[in-house]
Picture 1 (cartoon, rainbow, N blue to C red):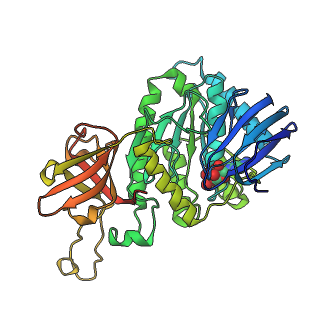
Picture 2: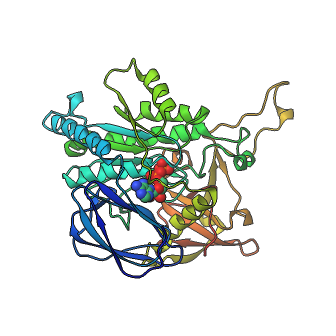
Picture 3: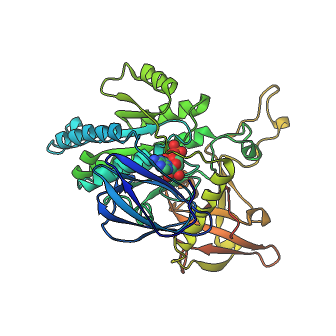
Amino acid sequence: MAHGGGPRQVKLDRESELRIEVGYDAPLKLRLLSGTAEIFGTELPPDFWLTFPPRLKFAVFTWNGATIEMEGSTETEYTADETPNISYVNVHAVLEERRHRAKPLPPDDPNSQGPRVIVVGPTDSGKSTLSKMLLSWAAKKEWKPTFVDLDIGQGAITIPGCIAATPIEMPIDPVEGIPLDIPLVYFYGHTTPSHESLKIHFLSGNNVDLYNVLVKELAQVVERQLSGNAESRASGMVINTMGWIEGQGYELLLHAIDTFNANVVLVLGQEKLWSMIRNVLKNKPGVDVVKLQKSGGVVSRNAKFRQKSRSHRIREYFYGLANDLSPHSNIANFSDFSVFRIGGGPQAPRSALPIGAEPAADPTRLAPVNINRDLLHTILAVSFAKEPDQIISSNVAGFVFVTDVDIQRKTITYLAPSVGELPSKYLTAGTVTWLET
Ligand code: ADP
């Protein structure tokens, strides 16, 4: 299954795929020698060497047969002739039909809105992968679907701890991923909406309310953008979600379906979830709830791997995938910034409350944060807000990484993606940290 690294060729029969996990230490080179093949919906250019970074897990799929050449070591490499891709491409065909039907209609006709697809399912069921496939197949046909990523743990658009949306204008590059130029990003600040570690910030140990508030904000802005653009509106959206499907996680999914007015719910790999959602939505006309098989190629990632890939995403934000960006280290005075935490902050002491009342934190309350060494190694979001009370409803311009806090001099040293002043003095803090490696 693993391979030491020498040059080799693999012949793929029609409708089969080569599943690969790149070795841990060195990249893998791969090219298409003959036939046609795609990686998660994006066609491979013929005879062109692509370089995949260590640890990347992916599959090269062919509809009609292909020969692949590779060089470099892999942890896993094998061919599979059983894939759910035919059922996935059938979904794509239905979506295409709806886009064509929507396109000629005037904007005030509700049917001028193309398909709004939401992909749900447990962790590691292939949600992000299916989202990418549907987006890339649509972009290949020259649609401009909007990708909405609600996964704060392992999002594909920007750094962890955020929800985001971006138009997809070209099939997604299998190496580079989604271009970062125009995303609309909201900073949630944590990589899970419910976690022990959040108890220091939120009494309940979670802040699902804040998550829902941000989902609503994002949906409103996307809605506005689509209303002004017939092509994007007809192209529709693909919404990726978190793998949290139990209890409160399930409620969050229903909230997202409702908030984005999703009309196609794709449920991956879980009969129970499919039947629950179908039951809830059966009285909602025009919403299809479709059960799809999980691919046998989806690789489970343990907590350590997830943590590592979060860290890689942050590194990539500042340094680029191939170390091709040069972030800038800056020093500022404490007084140059106002740092806030959303939802947390000091709560009223019990003694100040009526007898029997439990202190409760407002999930969207802003609490000013004193700049001190607690901020060391944290990621702060730079808000587009002009005033503090706009912070919750503002998307973010980007992120900085705190590398030093000098209490005596009252200065903070931070890494920013580029030189120059930050677009705003309002920063928000969460629990996203990074150790530069
Ligand atoms: P989810 O979004 O449900 O957590 P992903 O779509 O991110 O799951 O898939 C988990 C991992 O499996 C990813 O690293 C992805 O690249 C990999 N993967 C998905 N499908 C395949 C496949 N057919 N062959 C090889 N790897 C795959």
